[in-house]
Length: 423
RNA sequence: GGAGAGAUGUCCGAGUGGCUUAAGGAGCACGCUUGGAAAGCGUGUGUACUUCAAAAGGGUACCGCGGGUUCGAAUCCCGCUCUCUCCGCCA
Image (cartoon, rainbow, N blue to C red; front, side):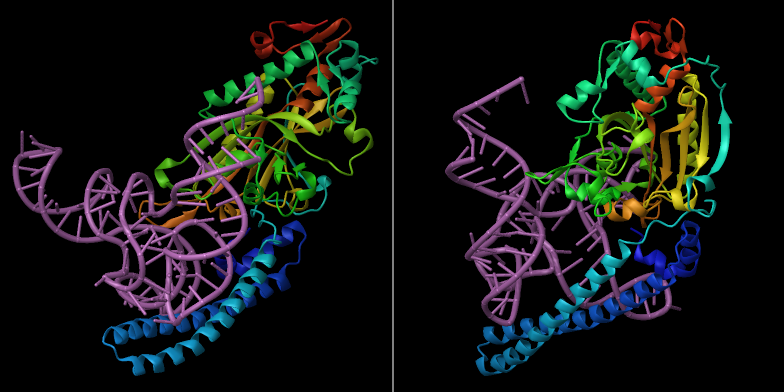
């Protein structure tokens, strides 16, 4: 949620930048400014009323002590009127606040200046492409065939237990999952991240804090009986560790990494998109989360983006980096890089990581602030990125490294796997 | 799931209707003191909204959350949430 102060101070700038997302927000922003003015005016009158009532109450107390009952009675009558008025104003005030909130909560984050204009994935900037494309022979198989042939993943069995999109990993397939998780965690720790194991069920406040609620309620699994949600990403619990927290400037950078399973309903997905490991209801992901000062957050974003590239290089996967256009960015993001790996047999790019700077959009909801050296309070900036999401990495590893007699595993994983090839 | 206790500032902790502008202590910051430190002494020490051109200063709200009683509520009443202890169940 954008802070109202930003709108007060930079309304024209915000309108311009929302246009990068293809939004004409002028009337909305103007409406918000009007509501803000209304709210302020009511607040002023209300405070005056309350101040007066406070003074009278004190005077009545003093009079009663001096047993001036008649005079106290006169004042008491006056406060009754004030009280009625205050009640009315309070009602109005909370209505105005609610209205303002309802409008603010619908405004997406303002894209950073450098975000390309556009609406569809075709408008994304390809920042760079790296790594050797796999050379496969004509009968190369997609990962779901390989998974079956080498008994790595059983999709049908998952259907029996839960439903489509809940694969069962078996044998070397399961071992590969565990190896990747450990590899990713160890790499992150080497890069200075603190490992955390957060809960994977979250409450409503947490869902609101990072922006999943109220917007994307339908994309999360809801545990109705206790009113909790299964996390769609570790971003939610890890970022929410800092909800209602006031940091000191010298605490930055705050770097956390966590492995969790992730759960997504993915309602409305179908066809090739959901084949094999391409899109699942449950998958594993290692997520990096950083908190930074506004001055540094874009440097941090670049650092994170480069870090994720390093992982892909170590795994030997051909990848490209996209800077998402306004229309393709998430509601909460100010700038997002997507990392895609090339999946040799499917012959397409698969998104395996999304690295974003949310600026103060989440921290405003989270009430995540820090005090600078002068003791001034500011909203912190939040950033996160997948480092990495497993299923599509597995898909690309299986497809790109297949040869007639099996599948080679990247060297960095050998110590984690205990084997070098799947045969 | 059952029974009981509790929720106060950065922390501990007092506070059962106006003397609370939340006592007292610890911590932290600054100053004095010191060769330096400790001790000691002094001063300060939250958040949000709002007022003000700005600073200084002022106003309002906040003692788990939401209502209510009252001229006046941390304090009384009602509802909720959470935490702790014991019991039960259990990895």
